[in-house]
Picture 1 (cartoon, rainbow, N blue to C red):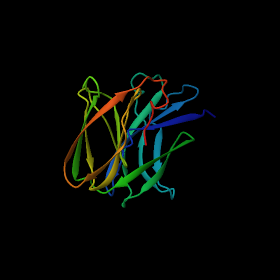
Picture 2 (spheres, rainbow, N blue to C red):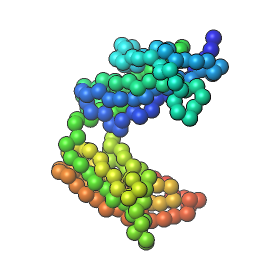
Picture 3 (cartoon, rainbow, N blue to C red):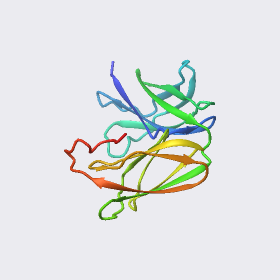
Length: 191
């Protein structure tokens, strides 16, 4: 029997409770067999099929044999985390998603290097279940729910302390990160 591997990507961080979210599923045969048209199922923790589709005719761009499909999956109805199983060609892969109420506020974050004030791109921003990355201008917008959070930022070779933040409307924050050599022990997440 030809074994297969499953990859799941574009899982949202977080999903909106009670809505649907889109994911991509790719399946690759270990023997290089064409899997176009193969069935893919997404099951909830009870084993019920909640989404299904068939792999497309062409592999994912830049791959030789990762056949893929985009699927819409129902998010948990409540503010909680849920685990799903993806099944195709005898293989199983699991992923989880956190669901939150519909975000009603926007947090705008601008991140620069402390000494030069140069905008920093690809800085990972974490605010509870909400995640984003800065663009080439060092900016990111995150839709978030009202509440108290700890704002964390990370980029390799840079540090900035976590900071508490209250979201009770649209908020803008500017953060200056300090450059540290990559082999320095503090060039990691700061808690």
